[in-house]
Amino acid sequence: MPLACHNIPKTVKVSFIVTTYNLSESQLRRCLRSLTHQELSRDDYEIIVVDDESDDDPQPVVESFSSVAYIHYLRQQHHRQGAARNKALEIAKGDIIRFVDGDDFLYAGTTRLLLELLDGFEGDIVISGFKKVPSTASFSPRATANSANCQIDIYNSHQYMASHTLFGSCCVLMFRRSLLNMPLSFVEDTYIEDEEFVTRLVWRADTIITTDLVTYAYTQNEISTTHQRDTSHIDTLFSARMDSLQRIQSFASSVEGERIGLDRKVHFLAVDILRNALREPDWEQRTSSCVKKLSDRRLFPLPSADYSFKYRTFAKLSSTSIGRRILHLLEMIK
Image (cartoon, rainbow, N blue to C red; front, top):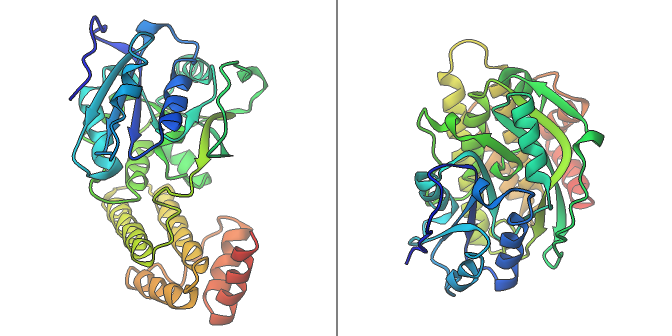
């Protein structure tokens, strides 16, 4: 059952969208607590929690925050994160959107700082830093971040994507909901749902602000979908990665005019697929399979491009079986 929110303003500044699936009470509580310590007034934000049909009912945890924040609870049949985020976007009232996975959290006070950057530079998107932390990490309500000490850069979408490796996670972005006015949604019933959404979102932005301010705590959860080691699940993840690559490649091909940034995204996503394959126990067979599929998409051998020394070295080594063995050993010691 949805959790009703009484007297909620018709609009708010920020909508925090939280997805949860079979998380512990302590994890979800930590996440929601962090959202109530962002140096925002209660009328400035809402929290939308979408439960992807967890085995245990997280609604009591969500309800415990209803006295301090405007909070919604929605439960859907199990269709994974893409569907959960789409459902939340349908009811979000905020001018600004921030996604947070339920097992992660935001550092205290950082949302206010990002809002200052968005408003001060009239930005569409602000991209901030994240830190990997253990799943047992605790949240501190004491704000310590200061934007005055951070590096801040301004780009348009073409400049940013042509010079940066776009990280395919929607959780490092805070963006204006107006970017969704041209229909944009997550793919559903699959994994790796962020890549295409983030690529399209960033591509359509006029002004992108980047900062090395660390705002997001990404927890290393051993039971998350990206850490499961079951062979069939790994196969599913690789299939999802390939499907995501194909969608982004098709989008890039449909764009008229300058598309260097989109081509870079496609090429680095191909690298990411190969790097993941090189880390698996069956790396030789899996890498060979990925090479075949990338070749079918004219992405292997990796396209020659002057992106970076690391890219050029990886491209050269990956083109031979001996080189791939060297890359496998390098990936295993990282």
